Image (cartoon, rainbow, N blue to C red; front, side, top):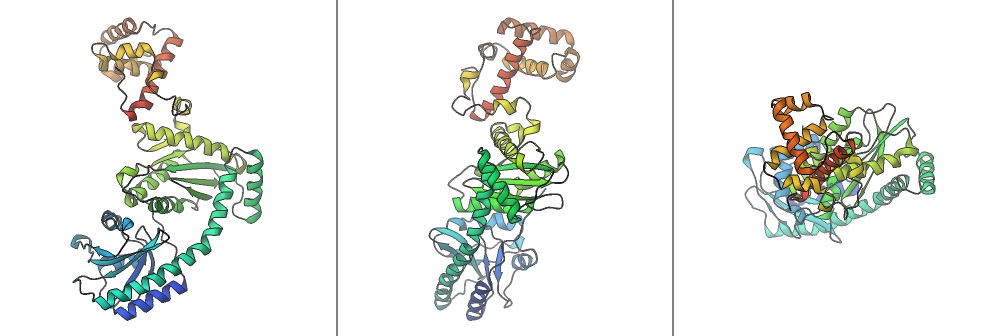
Length: 417
């Protein structure tokens, strides 16, 4: 499955005029992309276009392979102009690229195709002069829209806060301004990424917006979003409850998009909160989504997507404070089992037995062993741990211990230590 991309915001008329003027001066086509290589403005062509530019004009962004290739050249970190290498197999000719920055913030990328690297010193000087004017205009356009977006995002975060008074006031502002209408069903998703040297902070924020924005308004949902540091929040309101498959597909789409725009070290996760009844209850779904995102980060088996309603006992365990969630929580009987001969086989037997609620037939079938062999292993487990597997409280201790070990697995905890 590929990510669902949105076009970048179309550039203003003033920005388009500056791009067109530069293109005429150079006698070459000029394009301005956002930091994710999505088209903002493009000039007319002068016969120098390549397949990537043509596709970009049709779709508003390059294909995933091209985006990854360009971003892998480090353009998001460039502080000065440079050449982007070409690649024949994707129809990409070399480009002269200027990072458009204002106050350290990357607003976009100005690109001029230069297949034979024949840009003259005078043309490069003209690009530099025009880039300053284009950057200033982009920053002006950015400020004009940023205030409105910031106010809307702050209202959303107030709506999802733990303050009843703050939530009530935010709800009234949302409904009164027409930003949202109430609906019978609400759900909140939280998207988190890890910060790394490979992905500049500004690029992370733009990538989060690009990944979440397509789901803010769909055929079945309307909503609002906010991006804060390395986290994006998506509130969706629906007339009917969303299906499990629908939310899983949505989360997968978000992860796929982030995989295009960010390095693997970003390790994005999505947490989906419980399905609530209306806008007033959305804050509960948000709190649950935070827990689900934490579980997704700690449990590799979830493949980056945690859903509150599918977490079971992990929904409780994942709420333990970070400082408390460590190997000290592993029960001593499990530690003894980890130090025993054949520990891996016995632990797998115990896990399977407990997951099947103590059913011997189902456990032996799952492990593909004879029941006599299963009874022998269970006796070994009881002898080593000193616990009775017919005792519900003892089984609960062992089961929770195994679940805690799963949460600690991402930290490479050695249960035999």
